[in-house]
Structures are given as structure tokens and as C-alpha cells.
Length: 313
Image (cartoon, rainbow, N blue to C red; front, side, top):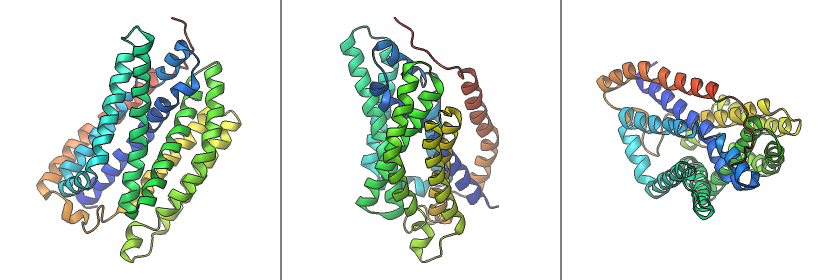
């Protein structure tokens, strides 16, 4: 396998990992006001992502850094074409981070309310805009952007609600299950609309037949999304979270499969790639750094695996 293919695969893996992990972060941030009644429950909900949200953002930094190093023309073209939405994504991530960090350090209810608003807006903006950006990459249409954004937001809400149900006990857990069922009523039809559009893009747009495996991935992502809702209804929180995470992972894989081998219109990976020496050097660095990132992530989730309860102030 040539190094351009290796690094496209690595970048696809990093982006997909970011979507899976930050997906429930964004969902929890948007759902915190809905799932909590009072300050103790609000801390309980936000505590589910408290130890991990900043580590999850490392996947985005690593993905963008790998794009810059391995495919500088792809990196430059993507950031130039979507300059405004990507700036808004960064603003959202900053606002969310400030809200999460400051919330535990302020003492007045009005200050906490501003932090909560920052967490909500800072979660909703990236959740919508990433879906819109990647949908536009595939179809270059306003309608596709809206469908992609709605699907991304609804999937994050479902993923986040399932995660809260998995990580909490008490009334919050019951509310999270009910909320997951409600959001699935939007996520399922939005998923059918968005996922059915993935195989029709990419290589198909260039006049080539769509590979069967992209169709299979899109169908599997839809089935996993439906399974997440069904498993939530049956109270199988762990399996429901596995299903929603699988749906996002399958969606990401199908998405990058459709972008191969031309991640931007008129630009192939071979044209976008760095020189052979740069790719070889990156490969040795990646062999050391990537297992560390993945290993640290697994360890952090193992350490903070216990369910949370609402504790009064």
C-alpha cells in the first residue's frame, strides 16, 4: 500500500474517532438543560464528559495536523473553501471549553447560567457545521448542507442521551432514555436522507460506479442507528451506546470512502500529497504517536468508567 493511501486511511480514522467521541460530548452539552433539574443534576450530567471532553478534542487537532503535513493542498483547499464555518466551529469549541472550565469556578447562579449557555451554543455550532461542511463536500448544495447539519445534530443528541443513560443513575438516567427515544424520531429519518446520499457522491460524481462496500456501509450505519433506538427502548444502555457509536463510525468510513481518491473537486490525493520523504518521516512519527493517543484514550475511559449520581452542594 502506497503512503498516500496509508495517510488518507489514518486521517479518515482520526476524523471518525473525533466524530464518535466528540459526538456524545456535543450531545451532552446540548442536552444538559433538558436532562437536569437543579444544580446537583446539572453537575451530574456535565460530569459524564468532564474528565474526557478535552482529550476527545485531541483527535481533531491530530486529524487536522496530519492533513496539513501529509496533504497540504487538501488542508489549504478545505480551510479556504469553508473558512467561515470552520472559524465558527473554532469559536464554538472555545466558548464551550470556557463554559466547562469556568462553571465549577463561579459561585453566582447568573454566572453559571452564562456558562451553561456557552456550553449549549458551543456544542450545537460544531455539531451542525461539521455535518454541513462534509455534506457540502459530497454534493455542493445548500439542501445537502441542511440535511447533513440536521442529521449531525440529531445523531449527536441521540448519542449524547444514550451516553448519559449509560453513565448516570437516578432520575437523570430515566430522562436520558426518554430523550434518546424522542431524538431518534428525528435522527432516523434524517439519517436515511443523509446516508442514502453518500454512495451517490464521490466516485459516482466522476462517472464511475459506486463501490458496493460504500452502499453496504451506508446501510449498516442506518441499521445501527435504528438498533440504538431499539436497544434504548429495551433499557440496554451499553449496547445502545455501542450501536450509536457504530453508526457514527460507519458513517465516517462511508464518507471518506466516497471522498477517495479526490477529497476536493479537481484535486486528487496524489496531487495534494507531500513529497515521499515527508510521508516516510510522518509514517515513523505516526507509528510512535498514534498508539500513544489511542492507548491514553482507552486508559482514561477505563479510569472514569463508573456511573455518576447527583450529589447535593
